[in-house]
Image 1 (cartoon, rainbow, N blue to C red):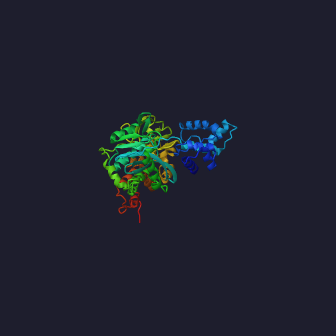
Image 2 (cartoon, rainbow, N blue to C red):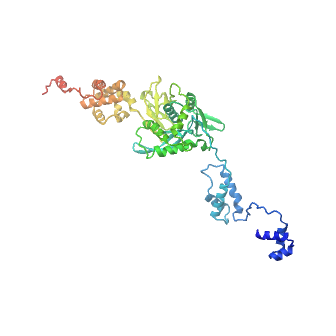
Image 3 (cartoon, one colour):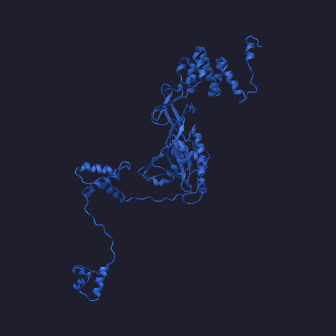
Length: 482
């Protein structure tokens, strides 16, 4: 600018073009250019486009990137894949991988985005989502599903563990949480892929069990828009937080239901920390959430669905196509109603009486669950089936050895006694009586029933009034004792 300034000064002093050019040693065209220019305001810099080796291929790359916008985000072009495809389409290409990668990065960086909107959450509103975590059961690592409910207003949350992500698991978890809280959220936001239903186009479809639960507690349900995880960011963050803080190290879980009850109070211990944005303890903010909860109805919702099944020749029925459960042999080839919950499968008799209870099995592998207690009466009627019956494997080893060597009449009497005592005092009590009868060498029906009655009437954990009956036995047999 100093040269231009000198030209302007000499012009003001009356110098002509040739004189200025001679004085400043400039070309006359240069002098004439700046003498005629009247505006010297700074202009925005403009990047000059230069021809590049990649220019012939940019349109092709742009087409592939545009197609990617309609594909699953995990299955889109990488820079390496674009470079390889260029080699396939243009064998004589003269561009390097770094040139292609630089252009792809620039195009993706400058692509328009929709952005996300920070949402405002009100007291009494909740979010629910599933994550996954590992636990130790019976010595083995098991991948389990973590149900998390969080209140975005206060950032308070709860964790519960289930073996699946179906409607039974969600409803069971919600019922337990509502009863613990003493109220139900006014609105709950679910992921569109949750087991309770979802949005299909403009329509929302729910499973019957969840729809009944919603009507029971009166809360409103909202499903996230597809690919809109920010709409439930609070619960997604909480899933990771609970996994790192409540399930590390990997917990040993002997009883899942008891562990879930403990998780209710363990979740609340993390409410003493400050809210990440509001600066107040979470427990203080949750008091506002609690005030906004809906009151609970007089009775809790029963989180079960009922389904009709057909049993086979052994009285077994199948659920989910690969999981088989026993009912009872006398219900073979009949239609039964089964009560299905998150943790249990319970076949019912025609009068609604519970036949047995199975732990619900999950997974894609075939499984067989048999309750040998339901076969006691059938085995007692057919003692010849004893050695191959499921009942045999469920009894103590000493009992199995004694009954294996017993004659048919004694085996029949022992099984009749076991069946009679099971009906009257329960299976565990009957097995204990049979075990003591075997130890005493008396396995007739009357002996087992008498033993069970004595055990049932004896004070619990009482050993101070045990009577030695050996003297009476000897007296009845005509023997004398010292």
